[in-house]
Length: 319
Image 1 (cartoon, rainbow, N blue to C red):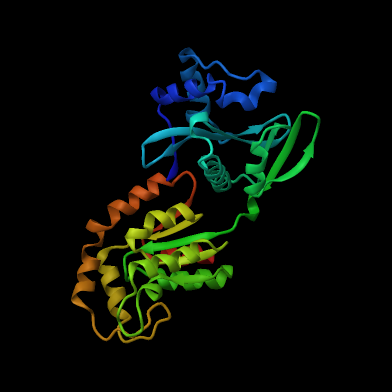
Image 2: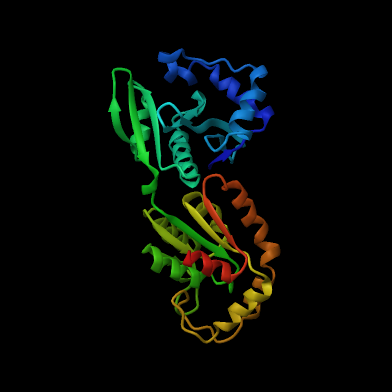
């Protein structure tokens, strides 16, 4: 899985290495090819791009999280002469042809949109094969000269793919229904996918197949925790609403709905199942650490909202 990583100062050896590599920088031949990046410049550059960026510059490494390997970089900056935001995606030559550039461009667009950029552009050399990657990612050709093609993408048009997660009884499903009514986005309950009406459950393969079908559609709201598939859903979403409520409120919420017909469950709960109750009691110990790990991992590219009360969720919907 490709994720983004904010490098430490000492990690800039990787940037120095690929900027000096002729194969990696072949796209830059018309402008001089390789670019020197001596260690004496690291601190000044780091301060400008990663510390005092003034919301006009964004820079991250692309990282293969399975091998813990840096594979490239993504960045954007505000061009104050042309008043436009310009993108930059570079994959080191030895890692090309694996889809990393496409994934990186998607992550860059998500980060830019999250940070309020409306339109992202890139001016690439007329013979740069990366043009196909940008077009595949939804960029369009704005104009061309004998030397460059200017590509652009309206980030305001990005589809919305929303996760609503948190402990049972926290109010996720009520919020999801209100959010569906407000946005018009299709809503899917993971409980309705996992449970049959006779109180049996589907197989893992059937669940994963149905979830994959949903994830491959343009827009959605998915309500449910189901931690095994949470990393996959984080990777595919654009927004996360996380309910981190006190356990007592979650227990009260779960108990209050017993005996009620619900659209998010295929049967009516007739009692507070002891095993389910224990799951809620153990949620902060068993589930929260992993959720916050994912939130930290995707904080740069996903819009993440944490609610600590139902009142906060209601206020967000009414805003």
